Image 1 (cartoon, rainbow over the protein chains, first blue to last red):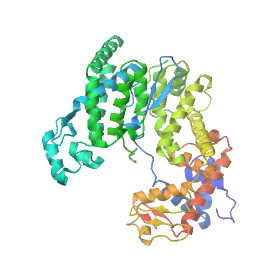
Image 2: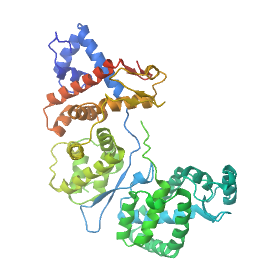
Image 3: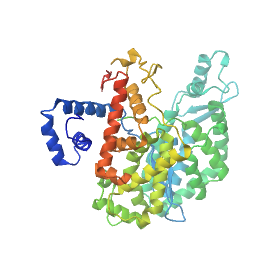
Length: 271
Length: 216
């Protein structure tokens, strides 16, 4: 502020932000017409304010879901979308629907993935609907001289060999869960219970075999997943566990697999 | 809930509005859908605020989560007088302060340097400003963002928090005053000093302005 002038910081700030002290701001506006020093001050601070817009707010932020415990209100707020990726459906409000949707997502994940034994004996992870797995493996072998990377490749090579990226997988699963969410929303409580029972049965039937294969494939593709940090997805799985959907060991393995597949940075989009 | 509200109803929900009062009453009665609507309404701005405050996305997530947990624990005794968001921000600010206090996290100083997208370190205080980085062409959006981060991080916490609330959360001065339990005049004075400090930092390093094209 021009030190020769009597206008204070508060009036200047009120003017800059057009917030409060209307009388003082009107007085200051009139003064600015005649005072170059104060005008320069206002312009400089306006410029500083404009500079701040270079750091915009994030648009897609990690979402939360509130999971009510059976013990009742209050309950826990669970953060879990961040482990999956952006744009994850967050409105899985009913705990049973959330649990069932995640369980179904696991089944869907197994359906989406194609696990085969590669010519060198290693397990390979493919994506159903994509190029034939043999072709993927052949392509990968061609890209890696002497078959290097065919066994336990690094992340980049693994993604090439598998023919999928984590983003693609996350996108597929996001769509799946969005559909499941809608499905559960449209059902009655009794229908949900029946559906849950069916899911439970299917997980019991298929879970172990599916886990072994997937676990091996992911192990080969992404390295030692046991060393990776536990993701927030684990919280959801523990919630499912509490609901008695699937067993704890199965949950842990599923958690490891999915967390490994989808582990990625926050990747916020800016406005 | 007294009236069935949707996400659309609470999207631009004003503090002290009937919708907000209705939601809070429903939360106090244990309605989890109402609570989810509150979370949905506020998690995004709250994340952006805490993210800019602490400078770490994962930590910001944790702090936002903890904020809502505290809301859940305390909402039974909450008296709906001012705006709910004021209460929410106050909890978040206190949690951020607690974090800095407990961890004794050293704030990144603007006086250190920032790194341009090309990997060059630009020392601002020492006037070792890379000429290329100072050109409109070289300083990309990411660099400008990094510079703003550094400038804000270099401010005293009391000035920074006010700037974050006003510039990025668009809170009214009376709301910021309520959140921080300060007179409005003090809020404005801190904001003024913060902007002045940032400007002086830029000027002392030969950066006189930043338009959309870059540093000048």
